[in-house]
Length: 252
Image (cartoon, rainbow, N blue to C red; front, side, top):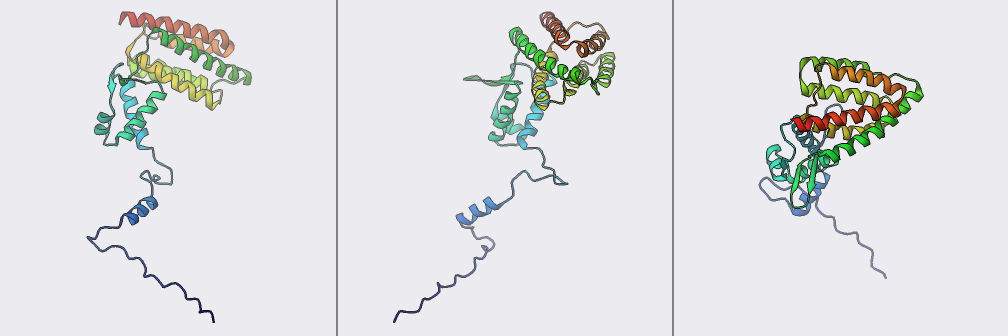
């Protein structure tokens, strides 16, 4: 007669290790895999910023404020120590800033704050021209007035009157972004903002010779002309600003 099948023996339940007892490697690996990620959602269920994004924002602010001059080397180990993060996180932050062209990575030289020469400035302005012209063409086709541009122009006037160059730069960028954002094209707006950071970096260290109030007057006229004829107005405006920047660079 065949023997009756026997059930496998019952194994005792796994008990957690007693206090002071080393946890088996396999169990540690399982706990690690099951543990929540380091970046847990903030209160209200909204994810908080990644650590690398926080580091990138801090370095970006130092670059655009002029605290880090063009050509300044940026080293992973120093960022890691300064911000108490891993070198991998510091490397990710630098990759973000490289994509924004605020820093440049070169073989055997490492990562440095970007330096825009005249040729790079002209190329940058040509790309800005293409994006801003297309955005304004869309705006004109819809027959709308950019909703935020008037407030941006008023902010530019206030900043210029105060003599605060960093605030003037922020307000100047706000005017151009108001025109681009009015097209309601996320891709155009995203690409334009990348270029805006480069322009901000350049103008932080180069101050064109504008008389008090002249920048606001120029931009009020520009907004009116660009809404009527973007193809000509944008190119003329950016070519003029390029000349002013080049001249300002030579006199600074």
